[in-house]
Length: 112
Image 1 (cartoon, one colour):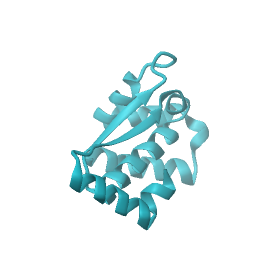
Image 2 (spheres, one colour):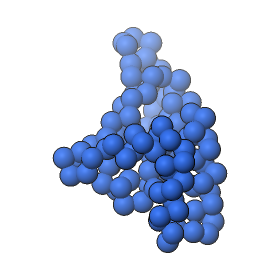
Image 3 (cartoon, one colour):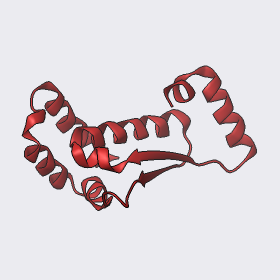
């Protein structure tokens, strides 16, 4: 994903497709990994936002493996800032710099 998203050739291919066809980006999120850590969820959302702004194309987020873990908690975190903050509080092992960074980034997600 990084090579396609951030390389010059990836941008050229993306622009060529978007100028010729109706194009939508699909960002696939591994739901069980997000369930294991709110930090993983935030990393995925940050990456999705950066792809959206980089390509300026419509973006759809797709949660996979929903037969293993329901995606409802992700939707809740996306809609409710306080719910995500509570999940971070419950995941106390992720304190320190990374936990603080995730809390700050959740404000960006709230605006997004």
